[in-house]
Image (tube, rainbow, N blue to C red; front, side, top):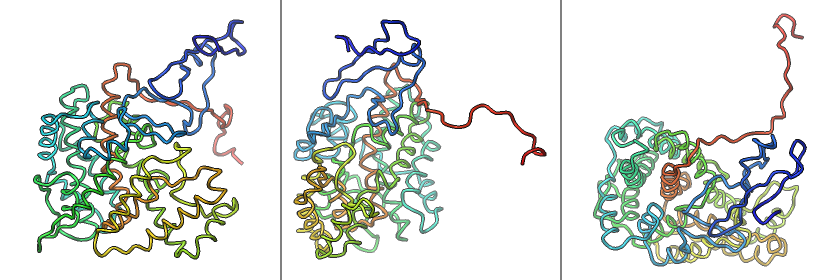
Amino acid sequence: MSDKGFRLTAPGLDKDGLELEVRSGTLGPDVVSIAPLYRQAGVFTFDPGFVATASCESEITFIDGEKGILLYRGYPVDQLAANCSFLEVTYLLLYGDLPNQQQLDDFLYSIGHHTMVHQSLLRFIDGFHYDAHPMAMVSGVVGSMAAFYHDSMDIDNRRHRDIFAHRIIAKIPTIAAAAYKHSVGQPFIYPRNDLNYCSNLANMFFAVPCEEYKVDPVMSEALDLLFILHADHEQNCSTSTVRLAGSSGTNPYAAIAAGISALWGPAHGGANEAVLNMLKEIGSVENIPKYVAKAKDRDDPFRMMGFGHRVYKNFDPRATLIRDMAHKVLGRIDGVDTPFFDLALKLEEVALKDEYFVEKKLYPNVDFYSGIIYRALGIPTSMFTVMFAVARTVGWVAHWQEMIADPKRKIGRPRQLYIGPEKRDLVPLSKRT
């Protein structure tokens, strides 16, 4: 390695080899620019899952998995969660800085006055089968919004991008609530602009026309925290999907719908539901030692869900915040059964004292408690990933806007290592054996 970068030697290169530029960000590891590799050396890089590949430049979110750090635009997520509302954090992710009071007031007004959806979209939801998965409904409706709001879809027009951002962030709770109401056979509840973002969502979920409904402030507070913690997480699968789809120049609703579909995968957005299923399987505190042993057995298919993380190798900085909120929710919301939470606490205690989990740094992550909170709030497991999508829409939009505004943007086009047959001649059907 030279002072400027890496020097690569390979067959076909001259004796001086190929110098690859090293680029540095404000935080995190340096990256090696491999753009000249194919042009000058005739080779691609091979990185299945893109575990060591930086696919873009971004100013939005930074993660240090070794130290358990998560920053939104430079702010630690715990500071934001303690001092800001979800829509303040939304403004930060979209525009780069926290708003002053006037900016926040204007933003809240804009979001509040985009909450309704076209009546035809509601009829679209009514057309789904009664037992359709809510994620299928949400993905389909978001994708179809391009047919209703085509007046402001010029992706190269900054004003149009802002209108889209406000529109989708305002309407995604309405769409989510409509999907939920359809799944339980209840009438749709229209949004109320006198309520804050999370209280409005809760009201659309749980109010019914025949009686008055008041949102429990603890429910609103819990949703606000969960949405802040799930708002963005760097270049994860769904965010990368939004960027890749958006790089083609497709309309933004199509790009967000692609992200929703990626999030639907159980390895991505379904982790908190998997935690609840695991706790159901364990059943009781007495069974914990048996299941901990099963988790350590490589030949046993059982996996301890909610522990460890693809990125965080120490601890998930969101987990402590969400654990405290789980205590608060279960202590304040009436009519909540606590066995799952008690079981989760004991499982955490046992696992964190076990040498196997300590050695492998398998700490509880944000999904370990989020599903328990959603269950306590009365949200069914089929809606867990939808709630995740409501929060993550903010991050998707921020990344889409950043990518579209980048003057160096290119359509995404990964390459491959081909391992199929070599060139062969076609044999006519009559001569094939």
